[in-house]
Length: 201
Image (cartoon, rainbow, N blue to C red; front, side, top):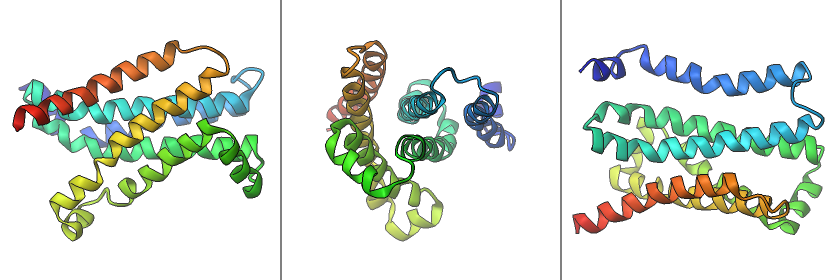
């Protein structure tokens, strides 16, 4: 009961937003104080990508946790988590475009077409865009609940594209340990939804 009261507290969302901003704040601090190693540009790109994947895992975990624990109050944090994940995805893309490509749009476009893992990541970001643009109550009223829910199932495609993006990027280094962890977590979360849909039918 105490947990549910804390989740419903008016301070819960601001506290969550503060926690979600901490990784970005640390990266900015680390960048200005030379704490990101020999290749800070790569570190920034990689870590913002990592936080995007973590955010996707948490967003997709909300519904299972809500139903398994019987804590409907968790639902009120999904939008905040989703928008935060989109922001980290944008930062990930910005770090790549700025530090790796110097914001040269033609070079970025050619690189996206040339390297498959980049266009997979770019495709995931494009899929996230309509979700972020409709992440407010007025959009739900305008679209209707069913159409809004159908649109937001794009998050499953985003999760698949994100894992494939990470896998293909790591394929060049033959290092799949972290990829496997994210793939298993997201695979379980998606499988739970498939199981629930089959059970409902």
